Length: 575
Ligand code: PEP
Ligand code: MG
Image (cartoon, rainbow, N blue to C red; front, side, top):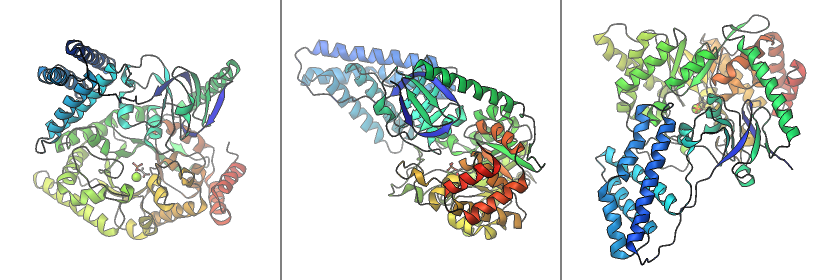
């Protein structure tokens, strides 16, 4: 009998493949006294050799996808495993104390890692501590006969099932082989959800129970359109889903006709649909999907993927690449949005009870000109290669905004001393993600060239509901009439001061929200590349006058998100 599990539809499409269950193995062991140290040391040598073989295989499999720099990490691990000093100490431990291999490996690698981590003035050596801990896990897994998850070694199509997926998990996966993603945790704005949309993998998140309900290799269907996951589907079910998948590809082919078309409503009103990206490599897909620009470049991924603070030149190169590859289409880069749930390995930050309400994004940048200024200088230099806008995240007050602008202007003046006029064409904007900034939108609008509404955060702060918490995910309500009212207020304030208003949170790509946002005259819709053509196609069938009536009706007469959804469904015949 098949089993149907409901989660949150996070990325469109249908995937059918066997389950790959990502479970961190239990590497606990008993410390034992042993009789034969030679035999025990042999076990260690074998486990080291097996670990080296694993790493070589992982590296080989990842070669096509990862950069040389990313591949270096595997060589660093192999070097540690080949270090005679570490093996010698493990042998001594076994000979002198007559302990089992697991205990000797754990103890010696633990000492090495602690020693490296203590080198406070040597960041390179500190980072090697993490490498030593990683290889200790790998060696222990071989000693205990337990397999470590190795996403880079997947060679057959699978559906990835995990409690949650971290950025390092997704960086190891070959997206061509991952036919679907299903997680216990998360909502539409969790990392797994955003990544699966970027990689165009069907996904269902927030199932709560999936890892408890499935085994490796079981057949599974992931329906990222409806949020259903079918475990052990019958042949009839598989056929039905194959048909649904075929219908979906047909529809996608129809959307593909719109790649070069402008984004216009049925009554001819022009809008813009742009894409959100995390790395310069994402630009290919942006162009392929016909986005009219990049509405959000989450620049923190440049920092998170690095083992040091990226230099001004490294950043310049990344921004220049994006701008050049976008061939004259506009690019909006958001300045560093780090802290909170996104720690940086090389920047120690205070531990906080409520990181989302804590020291993050612009709050850190305003305090750390040695981080903020190189980014702004790199951006100003890159602006010579094409149209560029910069926006500041998490602005709460006018003072913060002015301070950020002052630092930007200082950087520009410094660079203009050598190169007059550089950076003069950059448009400066702010994200509206904090309810107070939304309420204060008129004052804010006088200070910037554009707004971009970050609904992922604006919703979490407006509803006081952590965007990563399953327990309160029911409060992710972009269609709530009170929230719609707040969005309309921001758009009206922007237009009153003649600045365009964009939206770059997930709401911008939500099919139920689209007619409401068009009815409010939102200018720009920025979303995962995978949503661009679907949205453009839908826009073509919507009339803005009708949309305006519907949104006014929703805000005035509806009290709940459900009522708004029914109103949109019934008035505009959206399915
Ligand atoms: C947002 O908050 O809506 C947003 C786009 O930023 P992020 O998801 O990166 O916080
Ligand atoms: Mg945000």
